[in-house]
Amino acid sequence: MPRLGPLVPGPLKPLAKRMLRALRPATTDAPLMTDDCRGELQAKHYAVVIEAGQAKPFPVRVTNLGPAVWSSRGTHPVTLQLAWATSRKVPLDVPAVTVEFPAAIHPGESAEVPATLVAPDRVGRFLVGVAIRQSGGPDFSAGVTPLLIDVDVTGRAVEDIDYHSAFATANLALDYWTVVGPSTEAEFHRLAEEKMVLLKAAGMTPDSRILDVGCGTGQLAFPLEKYLSDKGGYTGTDIGIEAIPFCRDRFKRPNFRFLQSEMTRIPLADERFDLATFFSVFTHTYPDETALLLAEAKRLLAPGGAVVGDFFVSTATDRCAGNRGKMEVNAEHLHRLVELVGLRAEVLHDWPQSPHLSRRLYRFTRAA
Image 1 (tube, helix red, strand yellow):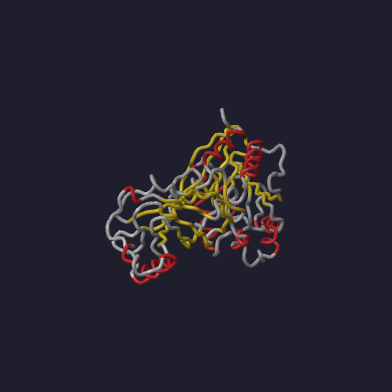
Image 2 (tube, rainbow, N blue to C red):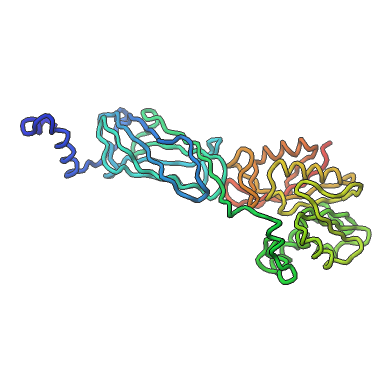
């Protein structure tokens, strides 16, 4: 600033510069040149833990090493951008966040930009890319190395499920549907009929011997009571001890029975079944538990029998993410587990939830 030279003593020139900048804030009204796009980004933390859906302050220090001013004001503003991606660097379906600089950053100077991380409403390990962008201007990536932040998005404890507590506090005589998910009795039975359609497509006949793991309060048993012949049969198991006497009192056919099971063990030895169902079970179990349950079901399959179960399949996680409230699993990881158990997987139906998440119904049969 040559004009200040004759008027301002040397020790006061930095203060005078700041005062003039405050009076006449810099703007960026034209695209920068490539040489202008040189600088450095620094974060206080390169690994962050945050709850799903929550926000956390994430200040980033920006240093301008180029010859031009970087300003978030003007027709071609320069800003900081935060973009979410999976651990495999696949962009998430979460809008990138643009953060303006609190003031213009002049050549050779640094500023702390008060950014905020807002976690997506899903759990898992993710990456957040931090970069500088100019609207209508050149790419900064050659002169400013973007940051890549590891972010572990955790679930909230209130989202987890305590099955035993849920059944112990429910009055099943008055409300047998809410404890297993549906908000109304009508929805409970509508979902049962939809499951019947899926099971018939999977090969169920009136003579089938059905093993219903996670039978709850008998959602599938209601329509099967009328559908199955005397040659067929139904066995329902559940870890909720209160559900078993409720079902035994409700379903009186001699070829229907109900047993309490454990998290990964089915209390049956020599019986054989044509179809083992796991509706809304694997959506709440951890992958190692899922593998143990599949091994148990395989042990009980009759020749030509099959296992049917639904999963939340996600491309946003390497293995799994979530808790008993909702468990998401990577499809490749699931297939590896299925192969280790000695089963073959076939997709029967797919219900997309988002670009990265799908609820998928599988049919598993013994591998050749």
